[in-house]
Length: 343
Image 1: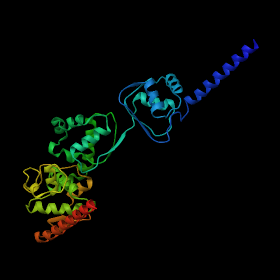
Image 2: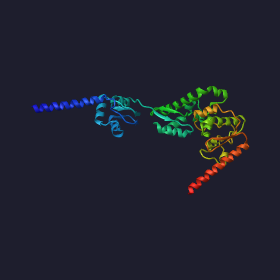
Image 3: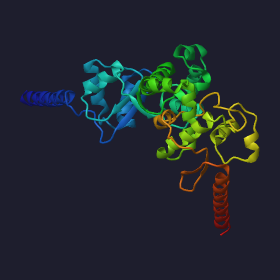
Image 4: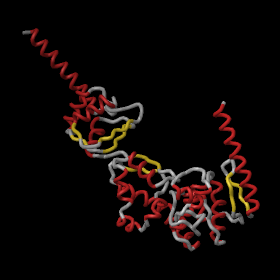
């Protein structure tokens, strides 16, 4: 009898210790933790068993699957919502499980860079968020959506403002586009409405010129000077003759050939006078500011230089000399490449 009583007391003590330990763990502030940030993406609603596999087997942020299931059941969290959730600090069981059960997501930080095509931006967004590129393309081709935003299809790319955005992974394409277009309105339309009116140009014309500057300029500090040159040509009624518009017309970012400049395309500014119908890429704020505030000079010609800048000239004769220097440089570089390939 004494032996049975002793064993019973021992069992009770063990149960009490295990239970007490678990109760302490239940409220532990670091029950779920990781030494580095881990992102969990739930594509659909899942049950406790599936979440246990993710937290224990896939990520390793929880050591004991049995304890996790016990804690979740005791706390009443058994169903978890789709979304992106970051483990970037220590969590108690209740804090983290309730977050997933209620669908309280962590935003995904994405950065849209300038100088991109519409296709590259849509592919990038779909790779970072839950929808595919066709879904967002459908929004961008929705004439009623664009009309509601007051944007013409040809000018849309210029409104896809380059910036860093905190977005929710499960947000639909319309919400994402709303956020990007709102940023454009805030950073450009609201800030520079007075200057646009002062220049007596439409927003589309400013963004179109900015997009050409974006494509042309390799150095930010040269953008106002390039802008001044294009403004000089426009004001004098000259052809804009902007190489980036030809690149856009032939749909290739490469060195242009003589035949390219003759291509019959509305965006070819070697053939058509004035600005093209719309932007050719999404310009950065610095390019937009350069279009709005061009440098004051008399240059009307420019040609690239090896250091990434341009040689600016006022006469065609000067331009020919600078162009010859650039062609000689390109030939030298080509010869060097050939020699290296042969060696």
